[in-house]
Length: 95
Length: 505
Image 1 (cartoon, rainbow over the protein chains, first blue to last red):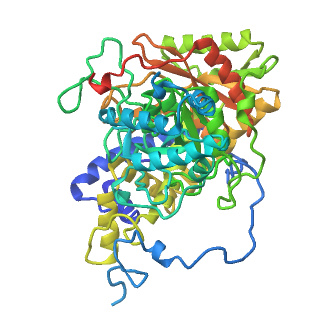
Image 2: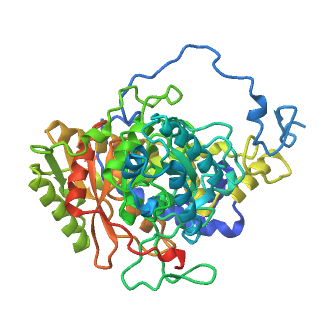
C-alpha cells in the first residue's frame, strides 16, 4: 500500500501538524518508504494469533479511590504558555 | 593524585569510603572535565551548582560513616528524565523551556541513594533516532575516532569527519566514554541504550519491561520504553540498576517484585549455563569483523563452562517492521499532549485548530513529525486492522519465539549488539529513513518481547572502533546477564579512549 498526496494532507490534519504544500511530496516519499518496508509483515501467518496487549503478563493494579494529591493549581499552570487565575487560556472556541 | 574522572563508579565509591578523596573533589574534577569537553555537545544543561551542593551534603554524610549506595557519585541524566526545578526538554523545541515541578521516580531513587547530578544529557528528539542527530540541540560527537582520523579541535569547533555516539542515548554514551560522568541514565525503546553503548566501548543494560518505573520520564512508546544505565563496566551498571529499579505505585506497568543486589551476580559461576546462538541473527553480508567478534564471545563463554546451543528465533526478521508500526502508533498517541495549551511552545493561530497545527509544526523536528504522521495513518479508520492489529499479532509471535527457547532450557542468548561500528555524522538515513532504522536490527526484538538485554564491549574493528556483544535474558533475570557479560568483559578487557583530543590540549 502507498499513500497519495491528498491522504498525506489529510493525515497531517488528523495529527494537527501544519504541513505546507511544498513539504507534502517529501513527506509522501518518506511515508511510502516506510510503508514499503513494513509490507513484509503480510508474509506472516497470523491466523488465530492473539494481538499483544501487555508485554509482561500481570494483573492490573488498582488503588483505593481516594484523593491523594491536589491543591497545586499554581504548579500545574506554571509551564502554561498563557494562564489567568489558574486557568489555561486558549483562543476562543465557541462563537 | 590520579585523575578522578578516570575511575569507575565502583572504584570511586570505594575511594570515598576509604577517604582517599572527597565527594566535592570528585564533583569538581567532573565539572572541570565537562567544561573542557563542550565541543562534544554531550550535555545540554550543566548543573555544577547542584552537583557541588549535593557533594557537600554527601561529604557530611560520609564523614559520619553514613550514606547510600551511590553516595557522592556524580552522574549524568538523560534529558528525558524530569528533574524538579531543572529544565527538561526531551531535546525538542516544543519543550525548550519546560521546567518540571516534579521528579521522575528513577532519578528520585538515585538522589535517595546519595548520587550527585552533573547535568542533563543530549539525546535524539523524544528518543527517536539511532545517532543523536535528531536532537534540537544538535548532534553529539563520539569521543572515539577512526585510526588516522582527521578529527581535531579547531578555533571554534570540531573539524574533520567525526562519528556519531549512537542514539537515542548519545549524550549518555559519549559522556561516559569521555569520562564526563561516572555513569549515566538512559532509556531504551528499540535499542537506545545498547546501540550507543556498543558504539562507545561502554556497557548498557535495558532491564525487563516493568523493572524500572517510567513515571516522570518523557514517553515515546509506552509498551516498549524502559529506563536503564550506561556505565564504564558491568559492575557499575549492576550498582546503578539496583538503585534505579523497584516498584512504583505511580506506574501501573511497574512490577512489584524484590530488587536483588545485582552486584552480587558479578563473578558468579556461569558453568553449565545454556547459551543460545540464534541462526537468524547471522545476516547476509554481515561484516567479517562482527562474525569474528561473535565467535570470540562464544569461545569465552564456552571457556567459562557455559554450554553453547544453536537455536532458532524464526520471526526475528519481522521485529523491525512490526516495531515501526507499533512505536509510531504509540508515539502519535503519547505526543498528542503537546498542543500549546498546558506547557511547552505555543504558536498563535486564528482559531484553536490552527494554533495546534502551527505549534506542532514549529515545535517538532522532521523525524518526530514523520513518526507521528505514520502512527496517525496506521491507527486511522480503515487501516487499523491491516497495520496495527497485524503488527501486534506479529509481536505475540516474536515473544513466543523467545518463550519457546527459554522453555527448552536456554538461560541467555548471545548476539552481536549492532551490525557495524559507529558511523560518521550525516552518513546515514538522509535519503531513506529505513537505512538508519536497520541499526536496531539486533536490539529491537528484545523490546518487542519485553526482555532484558545488555551490551558489553568485546573488541575493536579494523579502524580501531569499539564493537559490542549483546546478551538477552529471561524476564527479570538481569543477574544472569551481569554474570555472563562480566565473563566477556574479563576476557575482552576494557576499551577506553586513549587521548582526550576534544580538550584541544
